[in-house]
Length: 101
Image 1 (cartoon, rainbow, N blue to C red):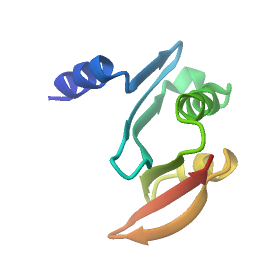
Image 2 (cartoon, helix red, strand yellow):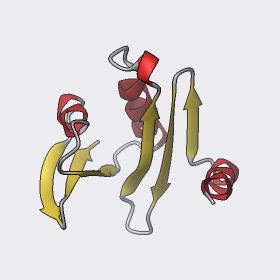
Image 3 (cartoon, rainbow, N blue to C red):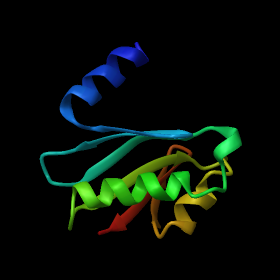
C-alpha cells in the first residue's frame, strides 16, 4: 500500500529523496502544501537532512503555507518547532504545525 502511494507521489513530483531521508507532500486545491511524511534514517538524524527536505518543499512552492501533523506524544514535535513551524492546534492527540513561506 505505501509503495503505491510513494509511486503515485513520485509520478506527481510530490516525493523528495535525499541521502538519509525522504519527504512525501501534496499541494491542496486551496494552495496549502501538506507534508504527509518526512522520514530521516536514524543514522542521519541531527545532520540537517530533515531541514534540507523542508527547505526543498519550500523552494518548490514559494509563498505557500506548509502544514504538517505529528502525534502529540512524539518527540519529533521538537523538530517542527526547530525548523520554524508554529503549533496551530491539536485535534485528537495530533498536533498541527504550520509554516508561512
